[in-house]
Image 1 (cartoon, rainbow, N blue to C red):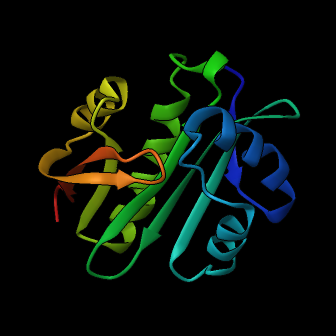
Image 2: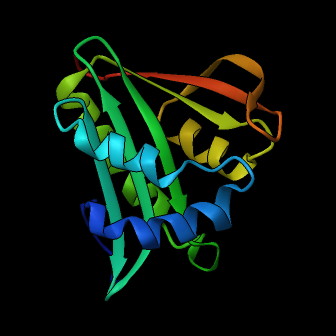
Length: 150
């Protein structure tokens, strides 16, 4: 795998938005939402995964002193299964562990691949949010991971 991670910038948003639409429609974030997230550098950590000049994945973390939240992870459909999602998640968790004792996330209840990845990284289901994703109305599984060795 020739993928490398780097901080997301506003210049990456056109490519990120293509992936966002491919992966999460109709429940996509907007360009304005990403711009807002990227402007909050004190509590946000967003990455892109690049292969050459192509952005093949992205991820974001919201981190406070008491808890962090995995905000998003997406990998281009044609590149899934290559470990890019694991690479992105591991980078987010390393950042989260520097900032917060607990990491939370929501994931689509029917996304078995993502659920498996999160379980392998120490997340456990703590609840469900009915109709969480809008406008689709899909349910979310809420998961939690506590920092190890803290």
